[in-house]
Image (tube, rainbow, N blue to C red; front, side):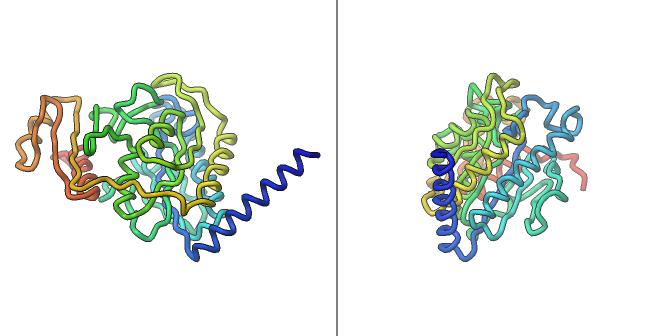
Length: 301
């Protein structure tokens, strides 16, 4: 009976906090960027692309984790939500299972990549299914932007994950990241680089292709809880803003792309596999990186 009373009191307090957050914001806009490697249960490429035998099932789990964040954000006062499908081909979410009043960014290329559509009107950003950086020695499917090509990405001398890179993009527009879900390594890494945000750990890395994981429903409940907490204290978070101009150092696995990039007048080749570029701001950073990693001379419309 004591525990039941405590639960009721806790629920009332959380509801009061959420009501206060809603009262303080006549409109409350949330941006959700959803990746896939950090979902509960994901451990190999068998879950991550159309050729994988579990991919179709994990599209459902990805959609469910995003919906968990949407539901909790709404209950906590969010009035408008934009979702970015930010994994692989950008066409993973089952959009007919998302609420009718959300908007979705799909496919590529996009000017701001995984954060396309973000602007000053948003109040907070949520990352779903994120993973650790390519420079991290732990983390399930750890990489930054390209597992096939990138060995390190440094901004102003600091190695970046996709979480911290995207937080810096949001920060240019004055928008803080308020919650991240993923494995324990990804959550901790992003919190260390970016700062205070809620973390929803849905699995624990055992190796690059192994993890101890929650079930999908258990993971969704953790995401709901952490999202509700994040939105209820949204005014406490600070944007992650990098000093400008931003110095970009990109290291690639292969020699020849770096050699060719060194021919550009605004790019410096600093060793056999690394180039340096100075960008005016994060918009220029992400445009530059997207061009380098996505452009091919044989591209067709």
